[in-house]
Length: 258
Image 1 (cartoon, one colour):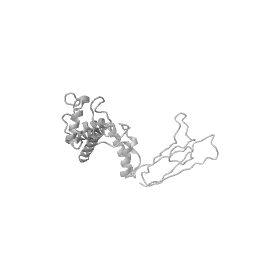
Image 2 (image 1 turned 90 degrees about the vertical axis):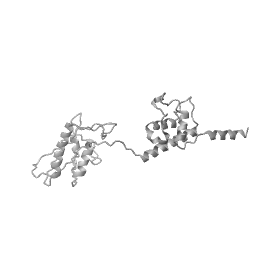
Image 3 (image 1 turned 90 degrees about the horizontal axis):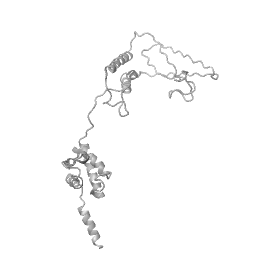
Image 4 (image 1 turned 180 degrees about the vertical axis):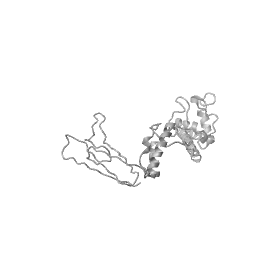
């Protein structure tokens, strides 16, 4: 009996198929899978009967599913004959390596989608190309989103209304980038944000990350100066009846060359 044990184990090991190529993989699949996944039964909508396993990469759409099912122990299903764990592991390793090698030799990044820039990308492109940081994308309609992103080529459509906005933005950008000496003086007014419920100016909290820590109220904004010239800044503090005295008002001006 002691001598029979190793001999039986050797016999089982000798009959364990070694998955080295497409032919040995085909033999294994036909032994355990074809009963359900043939051209007639086509269980789960999958038939492996005519697959050429020597060209596994050409059938990646089907064999990727086979790889997941066998690796997770879902196939063959419970109650059906299935290979031992070592054989199943050898098969999945060979199949994964075959699919990866084919993908590396035949890269397919997918069909390229020619699509427009979204609002943020358009603003960044204008800034990088013309040194005009006026965020023109904010004047465009809200971009459609898909899969949680607003830069998906299949989703970004182009409508007549959008083209009109692009033309208007382009006219404004060109005037700012080139400059127009005939421009007349204009007044730009910037107001601090107000509470949407009370309509009062927010003065008890830090307004934005651009303001110093410990600051309360105020505002921060960016402005593009189209020409060299003399500019007048006028600051009108908001009257606060119950504010402690004295009120410290700090003004910071940061200039960035275009």
